[in-house]
Amino acid sequence: ALAKKEDVFLPRWVRVNTLLAQLDKIMAEFKKTHTQVQMLTDLSPPFADPARPPFYIDPHVPSLLAFPPATDFSQHPLYVNHTLILQDKASCFPAAILNPPPGEVCIDACAAPGNKTTHLAAVMEGKGTIFAFERDERRYGILSRRTKEAGADKVIETVLGDFTQVKPMDPKYKDVTHILLDPSCSGSGIVNRLDYLLDNKAAATEEEEAEEKVKDDERLASLADFQNTLVQHAMAFPKAGRITYSTCSIHAIENEHVVLRILASKVAKQRQWRVAKRAHCLPTWDSRSIPEEAGGDVDIAEGAVRCTPGKDGTIGFFVCLFERDDEASTGKK
Ligand code: SAM
Image 1: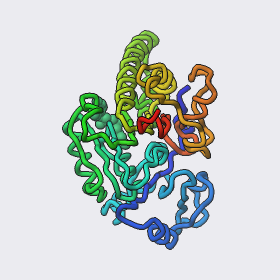
Image 2 (image 1 turned 180 degrees about the horizontal axis):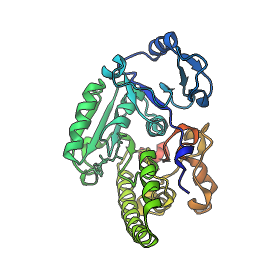
Image 3 (image 1 turned 120 degrees about the vertical axis):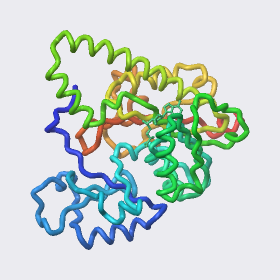
């Protein structure tokens, strides 16, 4: 069921761009002017000391902070100089879960505007290579600009083009080990969009609603086909051993159902891809995917994370980590 607007509590999440600044220094700065709190709920007004508003250090994603929802960072010097990046917590999960070591070669298959790409570069401590694909020219321009602004242009090689047209056997990509796949989706987990849907659903007549539903179902089915194609394409890269698949959708058809289709595919079977164990996929995050939607397979359900809009302060989101054995990925198996 869709979340009610009033249930949706979204703090202002801020990722410290560790390519441009040291986390300790930024936290020390905020501690001078703000009060550190231990609970997300303490970010709701009224504040104990309005002269020193609260801030929160996230326990799941390193270098992520949260501030009260109405906090305006647009003029903040650290935002203006790209040290602070406004990025919802759930949208930081894919790079945190993929967690490539410094020096690796990665792909971000659907990269613009580039929040997850620059996060990945920060996780890799600015060392290694990320091929970042984007097929939309306008959005590619934003990706290229943000890459430079974030100080990540030495690591990120942006490519204007369709990821599905890239040949996995191209020698250029022979060392790619990690792939972040965050394709276009219905966006149904994005809270502003939920507001929009809720408002419109309330206004729609029954007939209009039924018509909308057919269109929605068709659209979701075609998005799911496309998501499935993209992940299967990523699975063909010869040395790839880890892939995150993520959406900001709340619909199982784009999430668990896509995972099941992928696992049943020829490429997944031939190359021994599987859903990672919970231990490899943000084990301390309790909200996992839905077993009934994952064909009743508890391991698959436990292996992927879900975020419910407004619960735990995030938008609606889904991330699944696929992996295969090192031996398999180096061709020994
Ligand atoms: N990962 C991005 C971020 O966190 O900033 C958001 C990605 S958005 C959900 C999906 C993007 O993928 C869109 O910009 C879309 O134009 C692009 N895209 C969709 N299909 C693609 C394809 N086949 N190849 C390359 N880019 C694609």
